[in-house]
Length: 196
Image 1 (cartoon, rainbow, N blue to C red):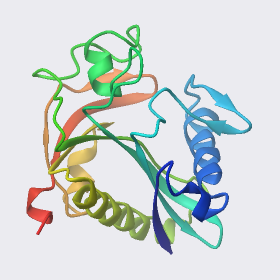
Image 2 (cartoon, rainbow, N blue to C red):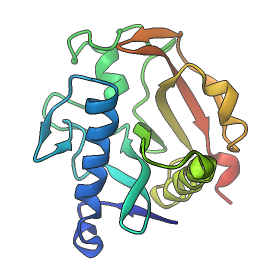
Image 3 (spheres, rainbow, N blue to C red):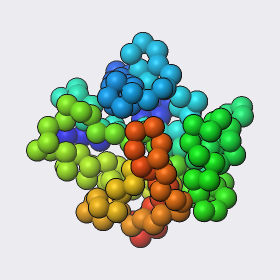
């Protein structure tokens, strides 16, 4: 099992892994969860998939087992910044509630947003926990390389049950809310203790 951090600068080194990650995202978010998201050539994508972001793929034998995207909270692309902030500022037209955070969304080079977190539906149950641990390891090492000391994420409201088991130090930074197919909540993940 390998973990690869992809960027626009290095995708040529990793063959079709970037495309496979976006195909796995389509399977997870459009096919399985039935979310109304853009797609092309069998891949899910959105306005935050820009050169400012990084994508982490956990893969084995050519199969993407899981992944996620990291975007700096300083990102700008036209009218967009990053998903949580854009939701708060109603740039997304209400698809995510504006009152998702207790405070104003940060714009800070040391804070990155983590989105599109998934474990591929075909990943065997026997190795799912290992995939989660690999994702956490990649999250912290990528954050170290990018200079992030904190991540923010809109995640399933069940996060308190499994974040601790994965070694993540997190706290709620917004209310629990129903979006599309479940309850979600914004969290802040402290990476400072993992940056030595």
